Image (cartoon, rainbow, N blue to C red; front, side):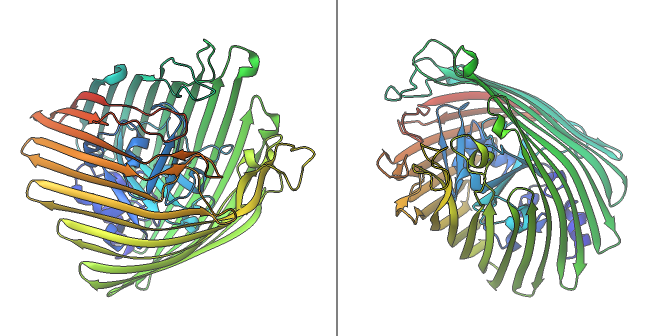
Length: 616
């Protein structure tokens, strides 16, 4: 497909707003994927294994948070230290939360100290679409893209002004309110939204925990975001986007009467510019800043207060040129990470990474191919070279076979480098080598895929009990490059529609293993699956979903077992009148008790009723 055709069809190259600008207007846009190559592609032609979650699917999921939504997707597991306001981690294909990249409208988010995205502070309100791309994408995104990349897209204005409003209430005194407006006027487009959510929650810990406190641990989240764009001429666009989210959450820090709590802020802002130069060249630029701030009060004394702020500033320039039967890309990028810690001076530092990447993709007849390479030069860990190769062959119009290989790496977190008594300044990046192959079938309302992967990680950073390099200053151990790990598995997915019903299923058979010890990696099951059935009749929709998981372990030595579980969820909606929809969900119908982390509680049976308005 020529570059100019892609630009007209989607209006984006970047993974930022234009890719989903019209998705609310045209359901067919769900068949386009941006994240895999930072450029819009027909999803059926993308070589990387992926999942696209549309706005309708988000509504039907009955998910309370982004974490709950991701937990329902194949290839993904989550852990959480308590209720909906608690810290959470996402594992993609067995990769740790630090080994994945998270983007919001093309802006990378996350903490440079923990190395993971703050999923709990990320609001589900105003999300238009989520793309999940599995496997290493270091050529496109640099450090940490070992297991995969998750990109969240918020709503963007198009067409006449549309107003949305939502309200709802449920178990544990849950309350949700939201409102937004989006549209376009001449050369300007706009989308603004705000939301407020709260829940009194339940005790984050179980009585067996040393941190147990029987009080309820609730949360309150307030968020606002928007996108503004100006098109001075055809093929040219200037714009900005922003997101602010503040989460106030309670947690357990012992049996005292003190109300342990945290405040977490996410703030993103970006300026972007895109220009079509002739029929074969498109250039895009973005300058962005993402702030991740976490403050905690563990007790009433001064020693119980801590605050850590990560600021990521990035500058990106992407050139795309139609060359022969394919598309050539040249990417220049600079990423600056700065950390400020109120309690640990050693963490108040920073690093800069300059990157250059090139790739070429083509489609000739039944053949699709992709090749790319990237060099990252960091002021902290030096240079890293990564690359990828992919090939696909269309056996028939409905069936295609794929194979790919790629390298990746994870940069050490600032905790692993500088935290007193734990970090080691000489720690090196982890390195990954991935190979995978599979088949994908799409015909009419039926699609299915099967992918086998094997990702070998060397220089794995783990917490050793005996520090081999600095034993005098690290008597309790340290973070050190000592282990190797293999993430291998088979992931299966299918969905089909017959009459008024839509059925979907996915199963993951994996072996996330620490090769040095032979043990299963922490909080990752060897088997997990999802099943769902939806029914639609006129204005009425209803669905049932089942999530199941095998046993996991909560410690590297595999002594503390977390049992397997199965959770059933129900969802229903009714279009009461044009623009008005009533929503109902019932999660964990059987009130199943299960653990995502040892001695931390999970939600029991919960119900929620809501009302949504969207102007026509």
